[in-house]
Length: 168
Image (cartoon, rainbow, N blue to C red; front, side):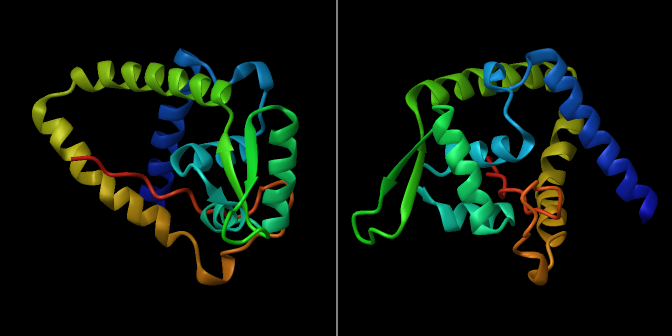
């Protein structure tokens, strides 16, 4: 079982590194940290997300996410607005320029990966598609309920990845 776990991380890491080498990093002019990028991805998928909800999704302490929000506000990546119903709640969204840059990067990455997927047989693509929910479940199961909040400001502790959207 340990060998399978190692192989899974090796393959996912290789996919991410090759993709990054081919299409570059999102918003490369800003040199965002890994934790900042994770938050940006959560906000991109969930416009208007509250800071506390983003912290839950990332498995980080709310004060850690607040620090990241402050950094991304200063860089012009995020916008923050107070919730109309509860003024204590801050809602997050990407700035138009950040959204545009991320969407262009996502499109380049998706196109490059789609080209690679086109080289697979129909049966291989079907097996890959069938494996995605299992991989998502593995990711969800990695977070123990007691690990739901990480108090490390560098984000190096256990984190929950945002649940992927499965498309038919």
